[in-house]
Image (cartoon, rainbow, N blue to C red; front, side, top):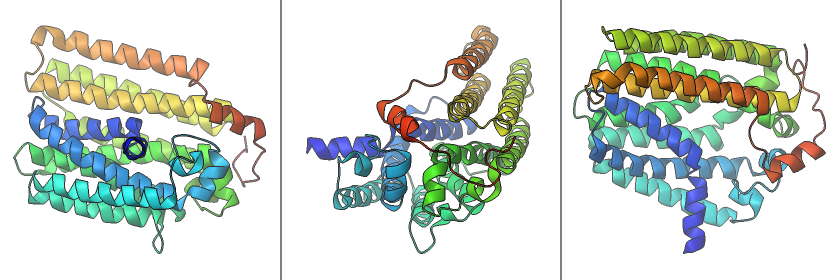
Length: 346
């Protein structure tokens, strides 16, 4: 029993679960109910099951690739030797059932959103569709699972219809996530190229991937500002902060396009991820301020503090990088350059 619980916990990928929870909270806050903690609890149960299913599908499909990219990584149960394929498959199926059951308590729209998300998630990883191997199609499909599902569940939990304003904000979040997810392939490019997984990076190289990321970040940030603008002084400050964070992201992506050293890549990509999370937190704060969930005297100091924390953490990541794990150290020591066209061009 303890082993099954641990497997479910690992499959839920806590950092990714926090990202899902952030989008769900953003959906509730966008709908004007940032303090709706009870509906948020139901959504968290739903997205936990959804995420377990999605991760199980991905790990089952990418086992051979993960053994090259992440040898011995305990975050991958199959690669780390903590689970068999049968055990992981069973865990994934239980996760899907739990997600559908929990969504039924939220309403029919939640069931529909989760069901469509489960189908897309399976098609992303598993054959015969296997969107993960289809170049630019992969980053177009994944945000539908990672962004749209939790966000729409959040809006629906506020018990009001989904509006065009919600879809504008969702579109910005969707594009911004594409700008982040295409950069993830830098970490996995060795195994992807070896096993013929034709990601956008493998097909088109470093420069094109970074260009796509910059376009999506810029367009997504602009749409987010349009979709979140509130006619208040705090709203203008929040928009300015979002603009600064987006500009910093574009600058770091441009630096990444001229870099070809693995550890430098890792620092820059991790810093860009911090900026993305910072933008979500600033949006949550802005919506909470607008819904009067934050005292007016604390509004501006809160926004400025969030901006300062985000930028300081970003700077520290660029300089020092993430704390290395043992599996990462072993992989770097044994890693050889992968001949991918355009990948290391200056």
